[in-house]
Amino acid sequence: MTTSNQTSTKPSTSDQRYPTHQLPQLGISQCLLGEQVRYDGGHKRDRFLTDLLSRFVEWIPVCPEAEAGLGVPREAMRLVSTNGFPHLITIKSKVDHTSLITRFSQKKIRQLKKIQLDGYILKRNSPSCGFQHVRVYTPQGMPSTPGVGLFADILQKTLPLLPIEDEGRLQDLSIRENFIERIFCTHRWNQLQRKRLMRGHIVQFHTQHKYLLLAHSRSHYQQLGQLVASANQYTPHQLADIYGPIFAEALKVKATVRKQVNVLQHLLGHLKKLLCKVERDELQESIWDYHRAITPLTVPLTLISHYVRVFDIEYLSDQVYLNPHPKELMLRNHV
Ligand code: SF4
Image (cartoon, rainbow, N blue to C red):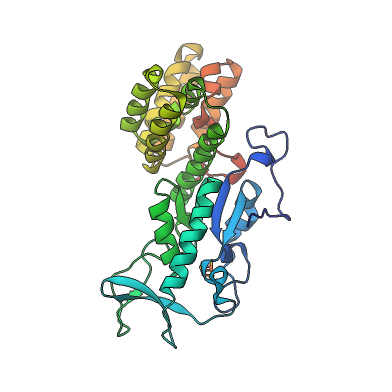
């Protein structure tokens, strides 16, 4: 099932980087959208997702328990470790739904794989949807080693490079920023695959993502640079098959303040000869203020973007790093 939020406001058509017919497609635990699919007939609406992110993505909602046939309402369940494996067992009547949810999940995730999702947001702590640190119990009802929900486990194993987070972790602004950046990067890469692929497209894609890659992982950045430099040795599809997984792995590495400062210094280097001393000092100071957590990343980036526009520096204006996701999400506004 594919739905989009009919009541939300999509980006204006003047925002050419995010046209409404090309939004990232995100799988999501259905209860997070405010739909009453939980065991008790309730929901777990998350306002950031429904009120803000909804404007920039297309949701693919899934409720494994309801869609597998358990209905709403249903008896509450939890993970019980039996012979070293987690089983999904109803709390009062002790019915084991492991096979039902596993079969449903395998089938559903095979379908999702064909859609080429750009990311997935799961409900934390759910015995079906939780993707880490989910409570697991012994058969006697004592807490055991935490585990992973059944649906989430199959999802991660089937699509290991897919950006996945839960709504709880997305409350952390640095995790949120990293995740949203990954889904938009994955979306751009998946869009490229849908075209008639040529080597030049991949080289251009790499060129535009250079500074963004550098902010995540220098080693992946260098590895991809070497790959693209020898692009002629591969067919376009061979090149994409090697480039895509390394690109996805690079984005899994978190962009730290230290790495962002390194990229900002590179960008300053491009501008140095064009700026007067006062402008250079002001930009340098804004970078140090960001480094010392006095101002958010958006401050030096706004200055740099301004000079890139003023001096019409094409190489930098094409850098995704300067505009990796919709500014309305305000992801670079925190210290
Ligand atoms: S956590 Fe998952 S299984 Fe539970 S109600 Fe939400 S979508 Fe359904």
